[in-house]
Image (cartoon, rainbow, N blue to C red; front, top):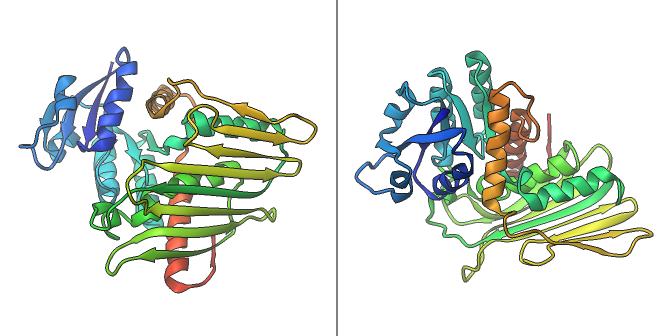
Length: 327
C-alpha cells in the first residue's frame, strides 16, 4: 500500500481525492498540506487524511508519493523538495512556468532516481484518447491542419491571471491543447501568437498558430473569457489527407464525429463513467505502473517540458509581435 500526501487543498486536490477512491486497494491518502491549516478541508478529512504544513508533508517518513496540486508558481519548489526527500512525485500541469524551471525539475528527478509524472489530464480523458485512437488507425490520414478552442469563465483578479503565480491562460488553460497538438500532430518548429490581457495581468485569451516540419498547421485559441459563466467549452477539429474529425465537448450524447472518405459519417458517444474522474484515475494507474517498473505510456516528462515550451514561446511571440522558433 503506497501512501500519498497531497500538496494543496483546492479544486484539483478534491478531484484527485475522488479519483483515488477507485484505487483504494493500492494507495491511501494519509496527509494533505495547505498554507492555512485553520481552514477546513472536509474532503481530506473524510478519507482520514491529516492536515499538515507543506514542509511537514515533504519531510514525513509516512509519505511515499507527493501529489503537487499547489498554484503553478510553486510546482518547481514543491516537486524538487519532494524528490530530494526521496518521494515519487505526481505534479499537476504545468510542470513549471518556464523551460529553465522545467529542466531543473527533470534533472532533480534524474538525480533522485524517483518517478516524476505530470498530470496532463487530456491524454487520459476518454474523449481525447478516442481521438488519438482514430488518428492512429489511419482512417483520416496524416493531420494537415488542426484547430482547438478552449473557453472558460474567469476573473482577471484570480491567481491564475497573475503572470508570476499562474501564468495566465497559456499556462493554466491552453496548455491542455498545446499538449494535445503535440500528441496528435508532432513537435512544432515555429509559433506565432497574439493575445489580450489587462494591465499588469497575464494573458486571459490567446490565439497561437503552430507550424510543423511536415507543413501541417495547428491553431489553438481560447481563454478565461466567457460571460456569464457557462462551464468549459472545448472544440477540436483535425483534417487529414482523406478525412476529418470534429469534437464538441458540449454535446453530451455524441461528442465525436468522424468523416472518412468512402465511409458514412460516424458519431461516437461516451458513457457517463468516462468523465474527468476516470481520466485522473487513468493517470494514477500509469503513474503507479511506472513506479512498479513499467515504461511511461502517455505521460512522459519530455512531453510536459514541450508543453511548457509551447506556452512560453507563445507568450514571447505575443509580447514581441514576432514569430518564434523552437530549439
